[in-house]
Length: 131
Image 1 (cartoon, rainbow, N blue to C red):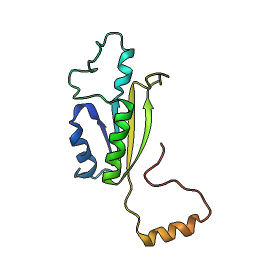
Image 2: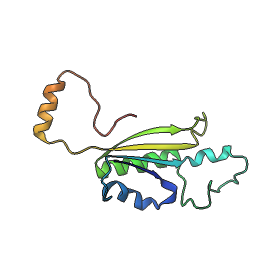
Image 3: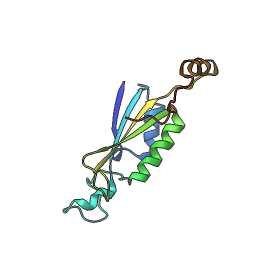
Image 4: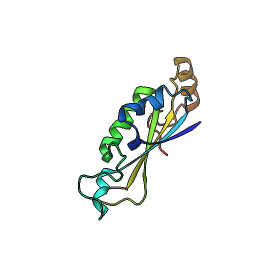
């Protein structure tokens, strides 16, 4: 199951719930949020204002990454990040995205099987996947 969320329309404290306690138990969750740093590129947006009046918050790239990595580690998801829209060299993309994928714990017995199958091969850690 795939769940998509735009973070600015829900309290930040509720977002971890969507990953951990969601009755649907999605295996993949796509989260997008405005990059507040990009707001300076909108001529008609007054300084310090959000893009839409119903936004509860808008995060910098660093704030979003810190939140996403914390939630992923707490609830057993891997997180990968990608820009949405053209990237400005100074302020980044207009929108940012995190793709969370459920990473079930690996048992010691399973690790032995994985080690045998991949001996000598380089591999990524489960929670540091890329898109």
